[in-house]
Length: 486
Image (cartoon, rainbow, N blue to C red):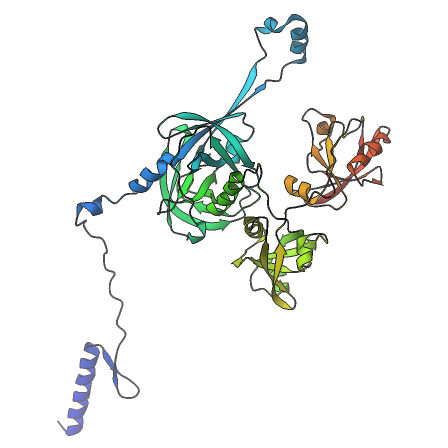
């Protein structure tokens, strides 16, 4: 074998050895470490090494929180509707002719609640106590105590009760829902189906759910912790034992839990409780004085945004704080007080949390670029005064109550502001107005082609109808003109 053959053989052997130990020749002639194939996964399972590891449990959290979760029972009584002939005989022959007093119809509700202050303030859902004449709460020790409704807030579906007792009660401290992340463990405590206090465990499935359609201020925590009928108003706890939400609703086709439950965040609960503690009978929220629209992908592209996030300003009330701050039609609101917003519902939630008094900082995108505007936080004014009028003229609106539409009325009735309009505030169930299909929130613009400027104009305009009335009405964002006869 010649020297060339020996050299070639030696080089081949060296390369084989290098490959065997994980090295290859680099372009510069240096040998480098070769990337190895990933090692097989290590099995992290292990046998518990001590009794403490076997006894890991949520029990300590539940033990501390359970005494502050109550059952809420509501009851209302009303006389059952009777046959007109029965009323005739009662009038002339007394109640005994039908076996005693007229029958009452009793309605009952069942839900849960959370004690949030030692003097007996309880937070629950508004739909648990809505329409109820009497409310009682049952404590974990099975005592039942009377409670009064201190404040109801239908727009958030929250209500605050006060237990009629001088004793001091255990509480669940309010937590910070802003620290929650998807995947965090949570516990739900309530009274599902009336079976008694029950604890379920799950994770935070999503945050800031806005397209749910449950309340006006939609910004829900979604969880897969089992929530069922009767859990409404119960506690959603984090792993520190703090209240991060009030369980409110489920997504279900059968009425049972499918692992999609929604809770009102603690930040909104805190705002409603603060109003109750201040002695208010309703929650006062700031007025922007502008109409907003969600951004579509096309709209987002037209204003230079990469994704449809924010709220587009479509109209500005010249008398409102938005106009005063310089907000204009076509602006896009991207954030409130340092927090980004995804849509109009997120804006409404963040702006409502700012409360009344002081200022709120809006991050706004316009053609000239991003800027910040300071908006005064004031309540919606009742200007013009509502001046209620009950319609008594024989007409399609007979029995209805109409008022002047102001920002305060629009906010309370959750309708759009229509400048200069008069709005139907009340429609008694058996009135002629109800038979014709009128409902609270209908804005009256014209009657018999005469512009309606105030609530006092309505009855005068109706009196000229003579059996036929042409009405122009604004309802649900649409303007309708119709002729009614009677």
